[in-house]
Length: 478
Image 1 (tube, one colour):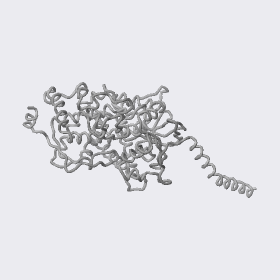
Image 2 (tube, one colour):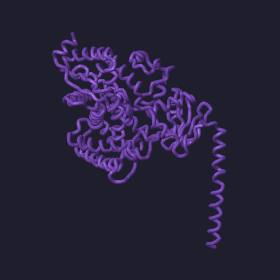
Image 3 (cartoon, helix red, strand yellow):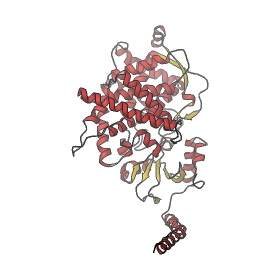
Image 4 (cartoon, helix red, strand yellow):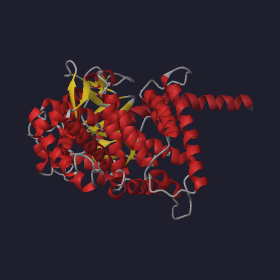
């Protein structure tokens, strides 16, 4: 009987093996009939990943769009992908049909951030967490942080005035990290802040490295540091609970959360969401700030106008003796337009990853289940039909609101960045103190772009900073 069973299993196996090409061919025929988008899938297995990274990714996508139109297919990073380059397509994926497309990240990156972070989820869990994060980052809440963010901005700028050339992007990362800590923990003690910073830097270094668990590699070190972050956060949470502190910061909101079934968040869920917020806030804000400093130096007339706007506010605060107010930050109209134009020009988040949860169609093209779907924000931001002379830095274009769904620096729909107002507030505060109290100059030629992984000026914008002397201030004001 055992021999008969074995022969039967072998027959079934051989039958399946022989029928596999036929089945796959039928699937291919079905998909051809369903009209996949135009495009090239590149080499077998490798796809077009090499082409993507052997040139400016923006050139790669722009070339594809010019050849195939607003929707096209490709194969990158081991994934079959559909690229979308119109505002209407972005809205289709991110807003009107968001239920058909789930957020997706490479598994290696999800491990470092934490699988319970809200931007990996859909449904009720995501909705509950998003409301909670939005509450902790509401204007009323972050407005109370202004004095502390100001102190952080001034401290950061003063640390740059050491007579040496500094990597601006690296320093802006530290500033955005410190500001993020304020929004999550309030005034965290120096010991815990330094422990968090040290472990987080190790995680950050390994985030974009090759995902191998071999001891000694950057990714392995990042995994170990991520475990240490959990321990540090557990100690902070225990301290909060012992002291029975009820705070309005993000940690307080997470600790006090209880859903309609009476369930509270576990410590690992709290940790994942805290790390997720730090990841979402740090590099992006730092990248935009670095570009703003470059754009202002490249446009002396614009820099002079921004200085005039900020010096008027500075003077109304008794020469900086009083802290900024929320109302004053809302009244920085020109500076705000500079930020918006910098977000458009640099397009730090060039695209976002989604995955089709079922076969669906857009404009007659099939988007197969399991394929990655990528709205290309940069292509939209640099479309001359939406923004005239898109390669020209022109903040005046934001004197009127852009066309719907054409400006997406913080995404759109239920997964849009809930911390966008905090990010803009950090930028406004740092620019205010930079142009009213300090000067800076770029060192060497800074014409290229590097990806770290977000686009930043070459070498992170090497620059020297110094305090503006009182006599120079009088000369400028006169």
